[in-house]
Image 1 (cartoon, rainbow, N blue to C red):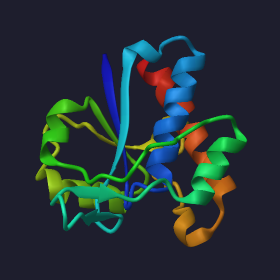
Image 2: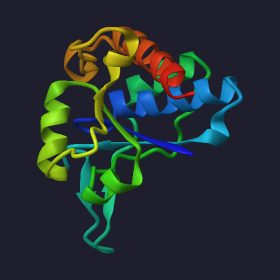
Image 3: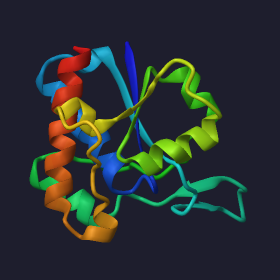
Image 4: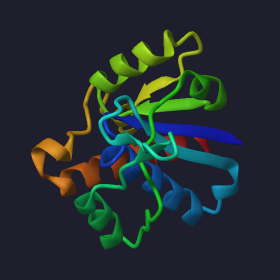
Amino acid sequence: MIRILFICHGNICRSPMAEFVMKDLAEKAGVADRFGIASAATSREEIQRDARTGRDVGSPVYPPAKKKLAEHGIDCGGKTARQLTKADYDYYDLLVCMDQWNVRNALRILGSDPDGKLKNLLDFAGRPGDEVADPWYTGDFEATWEDVLAGCRGLLEAVK
């Protein structure tokens, strides 16, 4: 099984979109059983500590991102934000970031990348160095959808 973790800043827009697009593509290609796919954040901005239980509670997928996925028949219900951990490095085979800021912040959490697992999503779309724009700031969820779809298609071909 190939384990892939998609990473962005808050884990409410780009990385969950990539997580669920990749799951959908793998399912449609008949190879879903070959993958373990999830997503995480480099920040804790979308994660709160429940005072009663002491547990972390993540925000759900941002409504416009959820809507964009739903427009393409993809359900992301139940997904909540979580932060990247050092243990994720050992568990996942690939850690796929949306932009270089995510790579830098992931390295801050992980310490290093001795196995070369940290990748940029759009490298898989034949667009090395390009970044998936953050729709939290741009408001352009269609452009993010197109980038995520292109990156996930290329990633699926690369690892199939």
